Image (cartoon, rainbow, N blue to C red; front, side):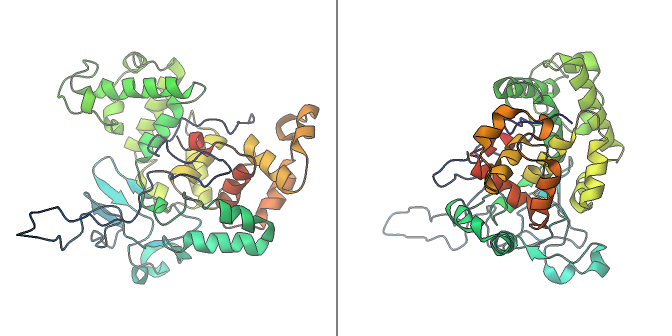
Length: 365
């Protein structure tokens, strides 16, 4: 696999493009992060005040939507404030094309026993995951403490873990964004969405109603031929890749439930088998979209530089010497360094990007 620069992944547009840019000041929010908030009462005349007694619904509603034992709910859906999660499962809420929300574990810890779920017992909740992970990183290497204190990670925060992800949207958009600029990727993606005219009621390609269109479902994509897909600006190969991806969602090889519950090994095996998705793209999808917290990308140039800097190497001197794919640090050395931070290597990787001031906003979409 060729070295991928930590420069752009126009691949996960379901993530808010406001994912923070690495900088020396406090980071901004990421991935549709929403703060806990209770709606303010509406202003009424002083003579007849009517204070609002119930907060409006939001991701941070104090009244999470009821869930079923099979961890699937019908939208509208509010992710629970503090649901069980595990480092080796998907920690995001995944959306199916038909309006349901899927999580790896049930909403309540008492329902998350291995005998009921068939999964390992969860090691944390959305409210405690980041706290446990940062404590482990600092205990493993205290040098990370000041970096962590200066740059809180919004990606795995309780708020960040409320993000709802449409996996087909994310993966198809990853393919659309490959080897083109961010502006070009957005343009092609918008044209691709407009092809399906989901609201206007017209035929594919007539453009009617596209102003309000949403990302097409896999079932819709498989009904469109390659020449029509190419009218959105896709190359022949990318059109084939997206059509093949849609077919895998339609035939059940991929799906929200599988992506939520699969082990890390199963996840990577299934996704790397998809034409158009390389190892690096899958790693970024697993980290930024699925919120898996034990992902580590040795092929990412920014991660290599960060690791080299972290162990005290002068990367400015290494840069001019070449060295092939792993010119800043060997893959073996990177894996040995990261191993002690398991099962929270995604967070360690995030801080390696921080150390080298990599723009993680573009990694997330």
